[in-house]
Image 1 (cartoon, rainbow, N blue to C red):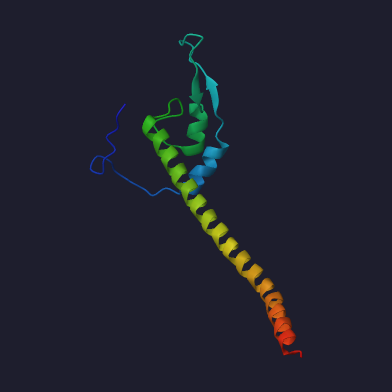
Image 2 (image 1 turned 180 degrees about the vertical axis):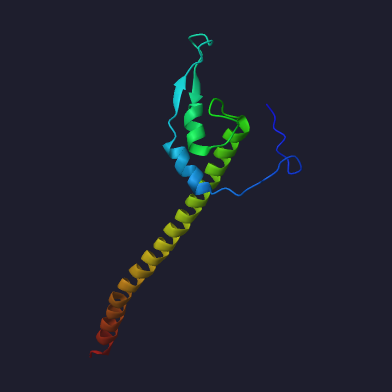
Length: 125
């Protein structure tokens, strides 16, 4: 199914808070199920439309989930996760740098003491 979600075909485009969407995705119940008309071997995976509607309030009603909306929620949640991951990587790198700096500063006095002892040893007759 294709969507005509091009800038000239839509109205009322509003920004989305990806972190809020991600929080809703995390809380969204997801299960496997089949429609009454599906053969017994067929299973689907996803949320119930009522839970989707309650979480996001997008689409036409609480009886269906539009593929465009599902894709949009997935994309914005991935973007939020990417931002979180990038921030955490930067924080880890900063902590590693600080830890290395502290380790070097702790070693420095011992190194200086060893050099001082070596110099004193050289001065002895």
